[in-house]
Length: 394
Image 1 (cartoon, rainbow, N blue to C red):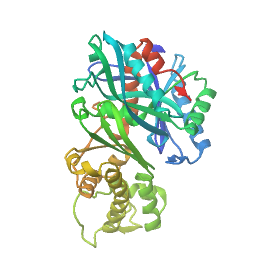
Image 2 (cartoon, one colour):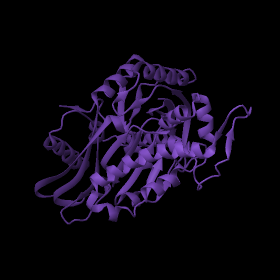
Image 3 (tube, rainbow, N blue to C red):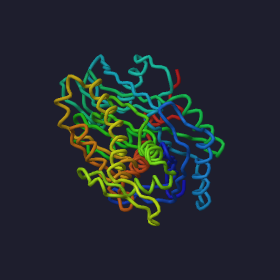
Image 4 (cartoon, one colour):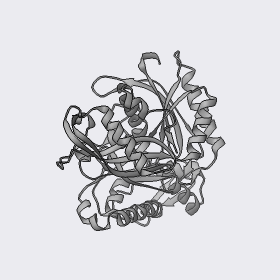
C-alpha cells in the first residue's frame, strides 16, 4: 500500500468510518483519507438493517478510494463488543528441561490453550493478561520473556471470537469491494491498549464505551479483557426518549441534546429552552430529567454487571476509576459527572492525544489504526499465524 498506509474500517452503532493512515512522529499518525457514513446501526442482537450497513460501507470506502492513487488490498476491521465473545483460560506449558523462551513458545502456549478451551467459533485474536514462569512474577509483555531460561511457562490467556453473522455480513460486502485480505480486531481491546497506560492495566482497569445505540463495559487486566458486556442504550436511545416525551422530530431532539448541560444541580422550574425562531419552548428541567433518566438506565445495567461479576471484590475495585469514551460521552455535557454520581465511582474521560482527533468520538478508529500499525511491525511466523485471515474455525 502506498506510503505503508493501512486501511481501517471502524464500525460503530450509528456510523461507519473508513480511513487510511500511517505512523507519524512522536506518537502521531499521517492520514491519507477518511470518510464516515451514518446508517441504521445495531443492537446487541445484530444489525438493524444489513442493507443500510452495506450502503454505508460502500459509500465510505468509495469516497476515500476516489482520491487515493494506490491499491488497497488489505483492510483491518474493528469488531464491536456486541459481536465479540471473550473466553479466558489459565494455561501452562512444561518443558523436559530448561530452555530459553522464544516467540514460538508463546505461540505454542496460545495454540495449546485454545485446544484445551474446546471453544467453537472463529477466533480472531489472542492476548494475555500476563505470563509467569512459576515464580509468581507477572510479565505483561511477552517480549520480556524471550531468552529467559525456564522449564515452565504459564499464561492467563484471552481468546476473542467473532459472531458468524457479523463475519459473514462484513466479509461479503468487503469481498464485493475487492478486499482479498480482511483482518478483524476486537474494537474494545484496541481501545483498552491504546487509551489506558500500561501501569493502569497492571491491575484491574475499566472501560465504558458509550456509543449511539449500544454501550459496552470492559474489565481489562494487562493486555487482555477479563469480562465484557454490552447493553442496548446510548445517545440515540436518549434522543428517542426526547422525541417521544416532547413530541418533537429528530433534528430538534438533536439540537436540544447538543445544547443541554446536566452537570449542575436542579434548575428553576420556569427556565425554558427555546428554538432560534422562538416558536417552540420546553422546560429545561424536563429536558434534563429525560436525559438523566436515559443515563440512569445505562448506569443500572453497568452496576448490575459489576454486582454480578465482582460481588466479592466490589469494595476493593471501586477505588479504580472507570475510563469513559465514545461518541455518547462527548455528545452530552455533564454525562461523565452524572455517571460518576450514579455509580458512586470516579470516572475519567479518555480519548486520543492527537490534534483534531482529541475527542472520545475518535477513540475507536484511532485505536484500531494504532493496533493495525503495531501488527504490521511484527512479521515473525507466530504473528502471521496470529493474524491469519478468518482465524480458526472449529
